[in-house]
Image (cartoon, rainbow over all chains, first blue to last red; front, side, top):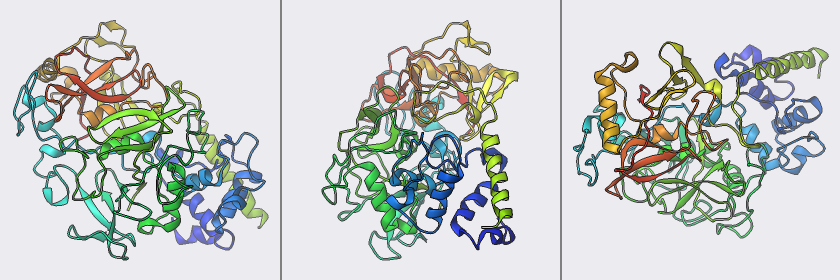
Length: 327
Length: 178
């Protein structure tokens, strides 16, 4: 995106211009993933989407953002849903969204016998074809323990969004560690805290007001136990973390179930994650943002005691870890 | 706001709508759920009836072992114990199956990436992967906490769980993307 192209718009709505021009500067393969249909009614209209985008670009949030500006068939009818959508205007199609698309390896470095028993090392039945013999975990070039267990490759990120050395400690200072970037998937993850808004002890029910991806059900509002008594559901937690600008960003979102599964260390003990880069992880179930197609009252979770990927009722109070794409 | 500015924005927005409307043979999703794996993300390799996920780089066999044809309507799906499934991947490589010698049984994360969450029974893009049953498929990943099980994905809904290694399940081979 060149300076000359930006200058055409800068007298009007700078951030809207960035949204539109960013979309058009991408390659053709991702072009179709840039959408200006912010209210989700299937059309891009001057009286609705344009109005909302212009208001967003000059900093308007909340109810005034969408007042009298929703299309008749709008599926995103709340400021929360629309703000989340605008924050990430261009996505690759499907679950990859704003990540790289590359998959993490599983973290499994042990082998199993044919019918029963596991071994400490990568030995066992038909071992050359087992998980432990393949991928980043099995490759000396990519399985350095210095930047994450086995084939995982993580970088610590500070509260101000900068890269940190592996020795960085958690904290609230601008140069303290608060997020972890996954170099393989291109996703930046929230690191849970021992107290405060992002405490690992907090739980949230599953709720969304984005009608384009809810399997025709909103879920349960405020069904968890968290930092206050009125905002304990997944949608409100996303809003709260964006409001404080975790790691200098405000485009945090709920992860797709595949993204959450990508973080799991299937070779480890509960909570099935590299604790050096993800401390304070509860050995509990964690919500994804993915609705369950088989039943509109359920959504996808990962049971971090075992690693199971299952559906659960949206009223259930689970742990949450937010994600965003890019550094 | 100048008239010229308004006209240019309209032309750009027309471009967005036109591109989005380009017809791609779409799968059937449950209402109000976004697809995880729309048909557009897959590149079909007609020469050997395989499919590449352009995002992950994984090349999948179009059919589970035992089935063949572009509609996977020839033959019948073979089933294997976990150990036999691993051996079958080795045998495929020895035979240079479809011209490649580096096939593998997918690990659990690779198998999960195949799930289409906008539908069920089966929870897969059936346009791209026809005739897929709603049963479990093996992964190459053993489980640490259940020492006689290995990870599977149930394609009735896409859930991932452990299953005893002595069970007989189908296998879909994969290569590349690591």
